[in-house]
Length: 505
Image 1 (tube, rainbow, N blue to C red):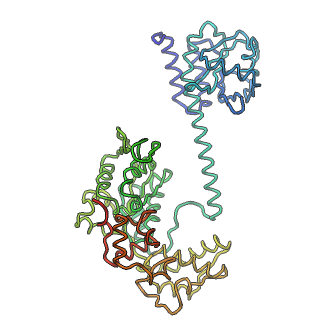
Image 2: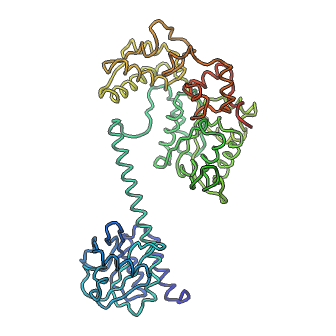
Image 3: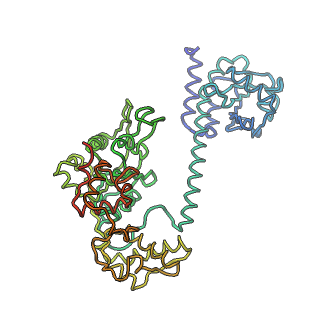
């Protein structure tokens, strides 16, 4: 049968039309023309079986004139009859649709005339039926050939509509969130003039696909700049995904970045896509890239060179199209000289480095940033905007800001809460009135009062050894000590403790 020229011609014609459109309704006329070149057919309809409602829903039709094929709910006896017939998998033709109860159930709206029906199956499951108008009882061998291509077309159509529904639901959620936040988009806002030179360089590199390395202290806005690069690139409508390399346990780095096959690692009960696969077509922001262990650096270099990844436990290479933006607060050049960061990876990710100034280096931005954060905090917490006073700005500009913009945002939100929505209590938010606001040893956020109780060097080293150099995450040193990870890193740097040396080699 497969060598019959008529079968080959019919399959080629139908499959050609199926491949043109994922939405089967768009290809209905072309499918009818393709079938009619071989079979005496004047009309067709594809109906999807809904097992929940015991109903047939028309998803495509052509050549039926004004006949409206909508939803047809079947009584239980006819539904059972339909399923028994469909599971046999053989097409049926009638000289008149009213010859049997099944014929009447399949096309109750059709005028009397010859009818053929082809069951569409996905494995053992009934997914629908193909209805053909024409005298086909002498051509059932050829009609049977249509089952597979039309079943694939129906499956593709179903998946497309599912994806559209998910996309519409996600867009509705996005719009609702933006409405609540009173924002027009999800990109972070860049406030002040201190980053004008940086943003000029962002505009230069964004249209390209060159890897970018963003350098700057913790909290200085590296992710904001990474998002700005993505939003100004040709990938703006594709995913922007962020992964904190410092928060991934060493033994899970490969699985997180590159994915794994079922059973490849402990607890891998299903296949999992890694961050590179999920960011395909878009931008992957590798935050704290200098925290990656040496073995992961080698595999990351291979991905950047070849554009392929291999899942843990997988056999084949997967091609990915991902733009890399990396960031770190570490002195990577010194790490390269010390041998803790690969020189070839450094050259690969630093094609276009961007250095962000610390907030204390751009004091002119403190006022605009404080006003921006006060407006956001006031609206979110109390439903009205708050405005910092001139005295507030003077106090804020006198602070050293070891936590940079992130610390400023936290201080402003704390000041709004302390002010009960009537204003900003910046004095209390920064610390007690008698404290010297120029103290460079201050901790940011909620740990201001706990600075005196910070762990000593010996305890820090014991904790790092126990946590194997890990800072973030449920098993990291920050969680063990009960402090903010960024605060812990800042203190380790001040004490000259290199936490990477505590990681297993």
